[in-house]
Image (cartoon, rainbow, N blue to C red):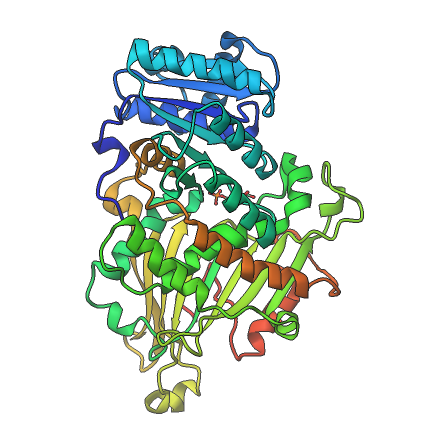
Length: 493
Ligand code: BG6
C-alpha cells in the first residue's frame, strides 16, 4: 500500500483533538499509539494532543491517566522517561459537552492560538465516541468553522460507522454535508495491521500466486478471526452490537475484499478502494432462506451472566457465514467466515484451500484421502504464511502432508508497528489508503443487514467456552462436503 512507514517519515506539525477522551479506546490504543510515534522519532518538533470529554478534569489529571494507560497497554512499557517528558508536554484536556456550541467556540480559540503561536496548522478531530455522536460533533465543528468543505481539517471516525444500512447512509449524508470525503478517515484497525497490509504485497508482488488465485484451482476460502477473551468490561456496548456488527461488518469484510479483489491499476487509495468495493458489490444480498442455511449465530454459555449484559440477551458472540462472490474469478467458490469470543484459541487466519488432487496414483494406499493443498495466511499471532502440500515419507511409500513456512519474527525480527500507530500516522499525513470509503461501508451494511433480518425468527445456538463454536457451524460446511480447517494441525486439510 502506501510506500512510507511511520518510522520512515516525519509527520507535519499537527493538533489532534480526541473526542471521547475518557473512554477505553483513548487509554488503550490511541494515546499509546501516539506515544509510539514519539518514540519512533516520527513526531514533528511540535504538536499538540487535546483530550475532549464531558467529565471535568485538569490537564495534569488527564496526563496522569494517559501515563497509566501507556504503562499498561503500550508495547513500550516500561516508559522511557525521556520520551515521556517530551510527550507529556504535548497533552492537554478540554472538558465539554458534545452538543454545546460555546465549548466549540473555546476549542476554536485554542486551535487558532496554537496555529498562530506554534505553527500547528494541521487539525485532526478524532471521534472515539459512539457513532450516535458523530453527526452532532461534526455539525458543531462545522458551525464553529473548524471543519468545512474548503478547510484542510480532517475527521477520523471509529467503527462502527452506523448501526445498520439506513443509519450509515444518514451518517454519510450528515458528514458529507460538512466536509469532503477526502478529509474523512474511517478507521478499521485491521487495515493497519502489517500482516493485513502484506496481503496486497503477497498477492501482487509475486508472480506465482495470481494464475492460481481463482476458482480453477481454489476449492474454498476460510477466514477466521477467533478470540479467547469474552466481552470483559464491554458488556453494555457489546450486547447492543453483537459479533456481526462488531467484527463481520468491518474487519471480516475488509479481509474478504482484500483476499478476493482484482489487481488494482496502481497503489493509490482510490484504485485500491475501487477494487475492494467491487468484491462487496459482487456478493448477492442473502435472501431469508439462504440465511437459514448459510449464516450461523452462536452465543457462548455464560454470556448472559457477564457484566452489563441482559440476562435474556439474544446477542450473538459467534458468527459463521458462507458467502458467494458472484464474479468471474470466484464463481462457485464458497467463502466461509467465522468469528467469535471465548473460542479455543486466539487465531486470525485466512486459509486458501485448493482443489483435492486426483487420488488415482495413491488410491491403493490412501483411498480418496489425499490431503488438499492449503495456504495459511496467519494474521495473528505467530504471523506468517504456511504452504501445506503432500510429500513422500522417507523409507515408506506413503504420502504425508507437510508444512513449508515463512515466519515474520524469524525473517524480520519481532518489531512490528501497532495498527493504530500506522493509522494515526497516516491520518496525520493525509493518506487514506488504509481507511474505508463510504461505498465499501454501505455495501458491507447491505449484506450484514440482510443476514440480521433473516435471523429474526431463528434461535441462537449455544457453544462452550474453549470450543470452536456451535455444532451448527460445522454442519454448514459439512453440507458442502467441507470442514473448517484445524488451525492447530495445519498440514492436514
Ligand atoms: C475490535 C472489536 O474492533 O476488534 C473487539 O470491537 C475485538 O470486540 C477487537 O476484540 C479485536 O481486535 P484485535 O486487534 O485484538 O484482533
